[in-house]
Length: 319
Figure 1: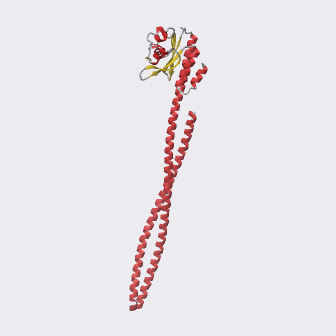
Figure 2: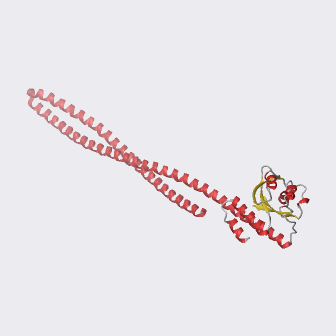
Figure 3: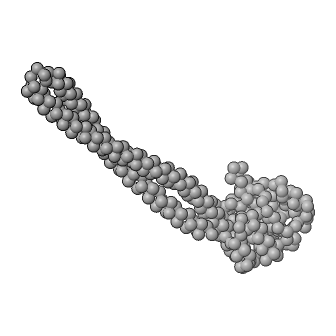
């Protein structure tokens, strides 16, 4: 039985574990036929699930269409008592629909074991012999212990399956988060690139503004020199008397033009100064944005690395 129980524990599914357990117990204890009945929680009955051995087509036919409520028949009594039930003579089971067919097929004695997982009866295993048996105490204890060990193996299998499903759910969630992190990283990288290009453009605008400022400065100097020349021309025209009147008029117009140029240059200079200040503010803001984007990028990379570790750890647990 030890080999059978190890195989049950190593089974990949409940059905496989039940078939191995049925075969092992039936052969190991010398029963002719065995079957597993699973609890249907919605209907509140036991339904046939798996069988081992052969008790004839008539017995199998009635088995497939039978159900048992708690306390009814051999399996129902086992379910209700949560303990092994043995009958030496199936003729005593007047509430079991399989009893008459079983007797006709030569089945004499039967035993039923509860399978308990997580504190609840999840099904029963019944076994039948073609001879009348009496159950010695040692054999009774051996059957009870076997039922307990099968229950424990099925419970471990159920826990493993729950862990598997939970692990697959976690891995699915990790994959989704990884995809979102990848998208966020891509967006952050694009933001970093756009911010860098905008910063370069604004910096270029700042240089152009500075160059305009230089030109304005040159124009201011020329206007000042022109104004000085106009002033000198006015003085010389005054010294020339009547002959210098026409020259004085030209000098006056030149002076007015120099003053107007100086005023316009001042306005341009003020505007250029304002533009340069705005450019400086924009550059500072873009630099702050670039730093923030880089922090986001670094955070996304850190999250990605953590998720990769979690995914690897989950796969290792499920392996």
